[in-house]
Image 1 (tube, rainbow, N blue to C red):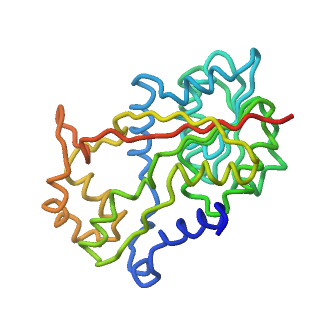
Image 2 (cartoon, one colour; image 1 turned 180 degrees about the horizontal axis):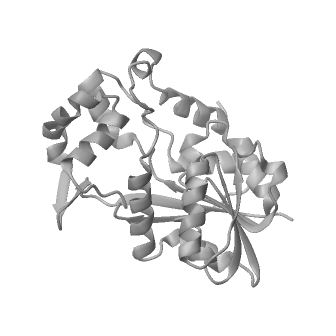
Length: 273
């Protein structure tokens, strides 16, 4: 099996069964804007990530940066501030509005494109560096996604990704609540294998870790978030607290799930042009 086929197979295995999905009161894949906004604020108030350093070092003077799956820009705004023209692509108009808002708060002007990458790639201008942070696990057809990034990059394409699927920690909970097994992959190593298969060249891979940026202000907010992810009816989400309590750390009145830092890989593919 090819690396790209393995990637697709593993991601497709994460799809929730139709019978379970049909019971969901809201999409288990979504985020509340308030939680996403807070997550971005935490990212902007802490030390820059390793990806920020790596992409910043790649940038020429008078640079341009393109961020695919930009969200509110928590990965790219710290890089571009004061030095680069920044363009963001996202499927969500709500996220793009948040991106523009956070840019204005930094006295920055950004360009936005709504749509799915690479479907809208022909409408989006090229850039010195094209980046995508924590989006790849949402993309089963990963080769066209990466190829379009490379086609738009004059210097490099950069992907930030967690070492394991971001829902991997939910696997024991899905088994406990629904009796549903979840796949083991894909992983950052699988992404690197796809890139090698595409280009014939090993990309640069930088491994690093940090504490997660997702904090909850109350047990109600935490159980609501996990209830959504685990397809638990709203009326029953309070019952998740005894299940989640062994996993929760409380600091300064805020709640976080898991004591261990999250491990990341930042993958750099140099442009061949």
